[in-house]
Length: 272
Image 1 (cartoon, one colour):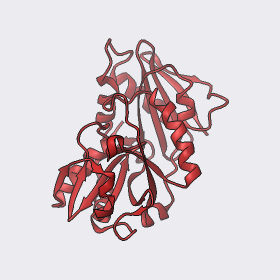
Image 2 (cartoon, helix red, strand yellow; image 1 turned 90 degrees about the horizontal axis):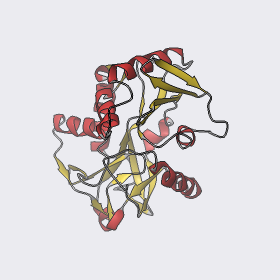
Image 3 (tube, one colour; image 1 turned 90 degrees about the vertical axis):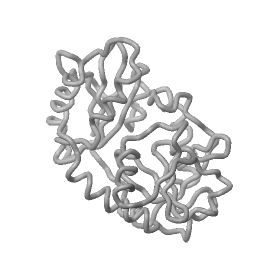
Image 4 (tube, helix red, strand yellow; image 1 turned 30 degrees about the vertical axis):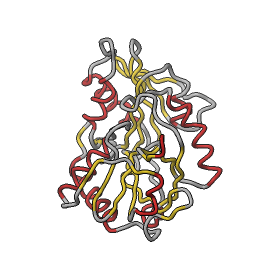
């Protein structure tokens, strides 16, 4: 069950879902080039965590007047979500300069509980975003090839490690813990909305935070790791390539932040 709309100042226009598309990524690759953002809904498709930040990122890199205002986009999004027959949705917005904003919807399917209980394996790849701060649809082409490789080796996520330093995930931000301090890269990454939330929660929980990309050679020295994204929240990482992270189980800092994040989203998601 998927839906595709073009959001315009006059209102949303329903479009046929591409016949060959079996995912949001597949459908996005059939659209004109643009900037995109992806998130999940809460509270019966009425609220989104960090929606202002998602929309700010969507509009930030336009070099010409936007094809519709933020309020027009919000109104269109409310309308299409109200008619979408799923309890909650995963939404992708694709802003195409001079055209409008495409809204792609699918039912929200969260990872199975064991992903959060036991953590996931990852691999490192020598890849970086051409423009890390811009979420451009062109990057989805490189992503498709890597996702096929992930399925082949049984990994959950690829960690982008140009020049031998892990900066972020293919579809996520990356955090790691050593000696009780939480680390994440500061430069050469897409500064995710969930990443910013986790950093705030860490400081509130009294967890020291520092900015540093993780050298792949230092993976054996870290105690914990996790990835974050708007659709999945916090997912523990228990293996990087062939190396277990810590004792191979989600650690206490990760667990504490998962609990804090779960409590936070129920009260902080903003109305669309």
